[in-house]
Length: 532
Ligand code: GLN
Image 1: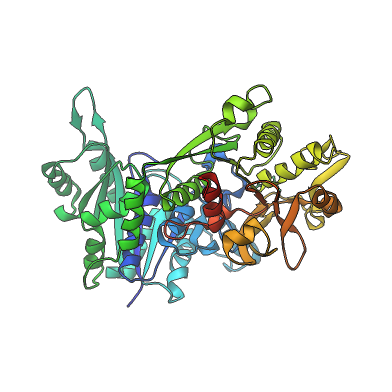
Image 2 (image 1 turned 135 degrees about the vertical axis):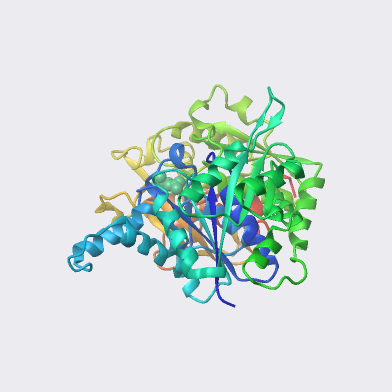
């Protein structure tokens, strides 16, 4: 079958969950046996989100091929179990950079280079790139931003042009918001009407409308919206708030979203999507009665998206083990010797989060010392693992001023240090050790037991490494380096075997954890936390 291109735009307000809707549709189409991928177009000028801090943009998600991407790609992978890559996240910055490089190279032969057609052609080339591989039946394209933004106009214009080129192989879904006014006790459709008008003014007519809402939208009101917005009545779907984002695929299916998409793109509708494993997960999510309390120690705890993949990996693993997750955020900047007892007591397990820079670092050492001395199952991720090493060096090896050269370039004991190849790099964008690398685990280790294998591959995002000069001393003192990169020898996993479960990974296991295949290390951590 010819590749179908589905575009998802958003209107009225941001944060409506276009990513979740796109991922849910992909999940349903995959469950019908189609080959699906999702890509995200972000209208900002940053070439990738790797240089954006979490206050601006939430978590930065890393793909296997080492691209720093938008956190929505995390949703795509978690919902579909399909890997994404550099091709799945394109920003305005990357589009402009390519066009400007071509212009400098002389590729435009004296022509004036313009938004239309040069920028739009480059956008269209990117839209069609994954489809051109022949690997996909459906390519879902999420357009970031909100309709009406200056930034997103070249993308909307490109979709308008693509509709002509692709004909029935192209479909537009517009996601809007229907607010409920408490004072008037009424749902309001006007913002949706305006949003669709705005879209029409830019030359796009949506085929399907999805209405985000906190209240049930009566059928009569949906018919009215269909009429005003020039959309078929059965193609107006509501998306109410759900207790879990993982329920959204079923809510969409109940309103036939997948069928409507197939019908409108000329694909015969046969049978039902195979959602049994997904429903099994949801059953477990709903029926769990026992709780597991996990503390997440980090400096961005007030931001709900900063540790998105960790939150989801924890939820997935807890659910698979029939536990309700009670996630307790522990602000590392506010943690010290005087309050650590009170803040960490009663936790079944602790995660020390990844991060950059000095802020909140001392709180992480306090937390780790407490976890080590109280033998609480602990997982340190990336900076969290580096902090495990520093805390161990300080308090067990007695190297009181041990540190990472990231926080203290003049430390006498740089137990965490920059890799040689990183020392000459001055640019910040895309220059870390990024993406999936092989790791060989010692067979007698908690990590190997977790994975059921000694050869694994996980994703990285860091500059600093455990300093080989201190490895022997750490091992002699009881911290074992049980995972190494087989090519470079770099240490990827540390453990303290005398403790119940105290493991640190230089890599990020959370990037590789999906609803149907939770990450094995998170599963092992969770098992330890619930005492299995
Ligand atoms: N800041 C540390 C480094 O660059 C850890 C990065 C991280 O936690 N992702 O090595």
